[in-house]
Amino acid sequence: MFDKYMICDSGLRNLTQSGQIAGFQFGARLPYYRGLGLSMIEEVAVTVDGQAMARENVRLKLRDRTYTLAEMETVYDQVWEMGEVAQVHVLQPGGLTTGPHRIELMEQLRVSYMPFPIIGRDAKTLNLEA
Image (cartoon, rainbow, N blue to C red; front, side):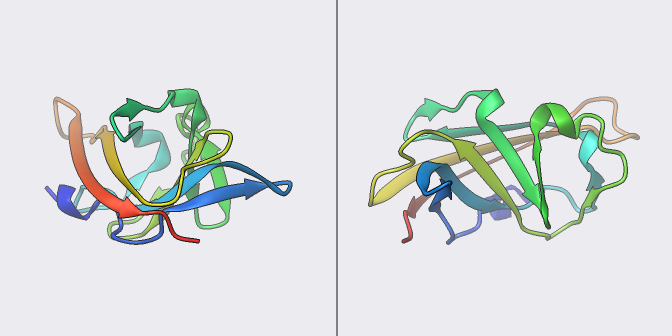
């Protein structure tokens, strides 16, 4: 529905933890016209330059808290609002190299009144920011 707005046009940068580059991050939105509880987001899949990132390495930072995808399955009190930008973190030692990268994002959503999951997909080429 709102797939083309899922990946933010800027904000791809390496993620630093304890002084080391531990991965990368980018901004993302829901492909849906309403907000959803985090437990209703069944999957967040990331592919970079044709390489799928492991599910256990993907995190979602919403406001001031970061969740693994497994943790999100039982988060019933947090809503990712329509249009709100969350940060997708991907753990990958060394992060990404300088220059353009093709980012693909898939989000699978469970909506109570739909008999099937809603799947949103977006892909953009972004330049790594400093």
